[in-house]
Length: 247
Picture 1 (cartoon, rainbow, N blue to C red):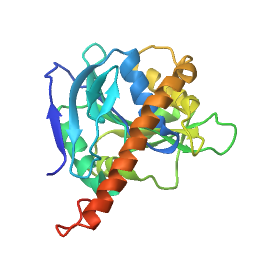
Picture 2: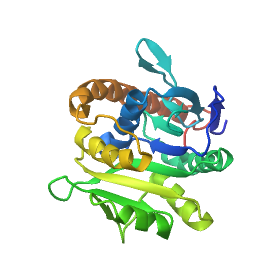
Picture 3: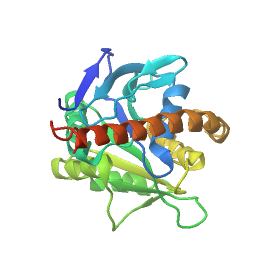
Picture 4: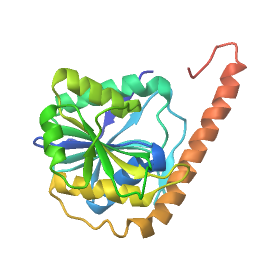
């Protein structure tokens, strides 16, 4: 079974911004997306499944959910994709293509990817990469944002940026300086402050570090179970005559 988008709602959106928050350095993407969904009171749009995704359910407020989900807000003309497990390397290209196809089909105005970058100083910078020169000029006007001139970015974000650059589709990556090895709510607050200005919405990010203790517990638990489940299934599949379940 390939990666599939299961749409459970049909909201009337105009030209929504699509925000992607997947796990990475400091879990910035997942924390940011989770906080955004909560603060803007976003509604479920659907969920994502794939044969390389870990077999588990995330449980929030007593309710089991698929760990890769989609949300929407008609009020803010916004879509958010969130994942509570690290996207397997073998699924990155297909998932990126599915997101890109979805964005084109739903007439998305731009894709904004949220993530972290290894801290270099006092943790006060948000870096950015854009698929189009005009987007870069727009971002250069934001005092707290520094554009990346040389380097590389990987995963779903990297594939979407490259595809957007070729096709002329607007894709932006926002990367806050983040600590390695643990969740970094401060970094999440930094990217959300930039995103607030881009979306022209207002919500409090000061409470993020306090609320991050709850987010920390929820996300770490889900991601820990995802890793354990993947390892266990890998062991079973490696010893099976049917061949590997995961690449």
